[in-house]
Length: 214
Length: 214
DNA sequence: ATTATCTATAGATCTATAGATAATGC
DNA sequence: ATTATCTATAGATCTATAGATAATGC
Image (tube, rainbow over all chains, first blue to last red; front, top):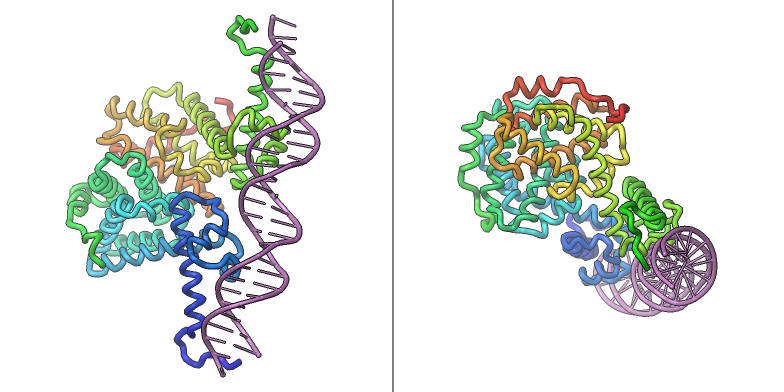
């Protein structure tokens, strides 16, 4: 009857969290495979979890998928933040995250697939990736690096470019993804009010390796 | 046994075409309503067509949906073409179509919904709308109005902007859609290499009314 | 004693087709 | 005679839950 007196989660809570995480991870694979109609049983089997457990955590497949996509975006937004933590210039941080996102389309096709399966949900500013991009833009405006009259409208083009670039790289596997991404990044920076030469230079700076833990 | 000797479709062919068109129209409503899992029976009932007829025309719901989306995009691409038929400047034609697309998100929510339900499929250049946009860009480059090193990469940003703008207008119904659309259009024109002042001017020109048949 | 998980399944739902009917062609 | 459509349904599939089992808390 008495509650756990410590703040740390109990063994039972940890077990519950593990089941939930397994479901989310399995759902990410399923979404990445484009199997949006996969039976719940298939997902729970992939998660190595009993069918009944699903309903302990989610009411519907749709709800699970949303949680799975949010988790993926949050996780990767976080990764970008760590990579740019040491950068003073918010414009540089923005450009670096944009360029890394383009490279991830090739490097991690599963995440890429999740992105554009639920693509336009991402265009809303209430997900981990778009929220961080908005934040970087606002910071760069404050620092006098960008000139943007309306952040939401700028995000329209930024998010659109991220999504459609992913689509293009997917459709044209022979295309050089680094060059293409940097080209689009440069275009986007100019659109955000940065002079062309500076945009070009900032998109040629070395990037952290995707292999290194940030 | 003998084939119909005239080129005009026979009564039978016309009947078949009517059934197909009814299915496509019903599918567009269903897609617009976001009911991507709607049972086939529901679609055939909306089309006022027997369940069995569905299989005379399509193998699966997915196939019907694709045909429905293609039809919607082709139909509207065509509408834009007629509107800009009398314009000499391809840059003006491009800008006008872009601005009208933004207005259509408000004016015809069903089409808008179709667009971003199948949004990223649209980013591929093999649909009626994107194909026309590419064509206009190429023409404007030839006419010396745009400066675009890579049409496909430019289309990445254009298509992304169209989609995500639709999303934004949907999420923020209080936002003025004409002003927002024209602002994004201007940004896109600058990105396509047009000087800022000219881009601004071209986005202030009067538009044909959506009510007039083009 | 309580909570989370598991297994097994009733009942709902849907797809795809068989066979009947109606329209067209000649 | 041929082709398209319709109605009705067998069989496949899936969801959501009931009831049993296992793990944790005290």
